[in-house]
Image (cartoon, rainbow, N blue to C red; front, side):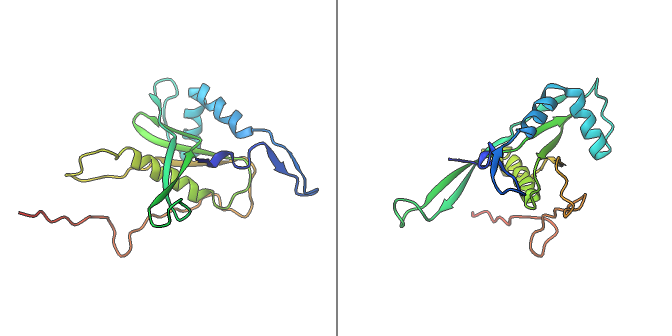
Length: 181
């Protein structure tokens, strides 16, 4: 099983000298700070998103931020059979404030693909809440509100990156179902 958040953990490459050096796990320290200080986390959400949660009266619930993603692979022992690779995905923080889910991702290095991972974590969170549900009624996939905190500013990235989920040619998704009698 591959763990995506630790592939390059432990070292950073010095761009000037091109050599690897031990990295300081700044994102781990930041996550610990906000996990241990409820009021600081609420103030962060208020400041980043313009919310107005009361730090003393808001209910904060930490939600699952680890997901196992099955990916079809052609590299299995038997090329004729389906083979899946398991990938462990770990978002930095997913939590709810008074029932509204938020996802905070701390980024310590410039990464132009971060928005794809943030949306991917949100989709995995939405799907994890849907597994083993009776789907006879409307199915709503609710993604947490994303907040990206970039520690090392990348001037090439805009302050806001739009992420649009669109169905081809449709405004909303409906799965047609015909009952057989």
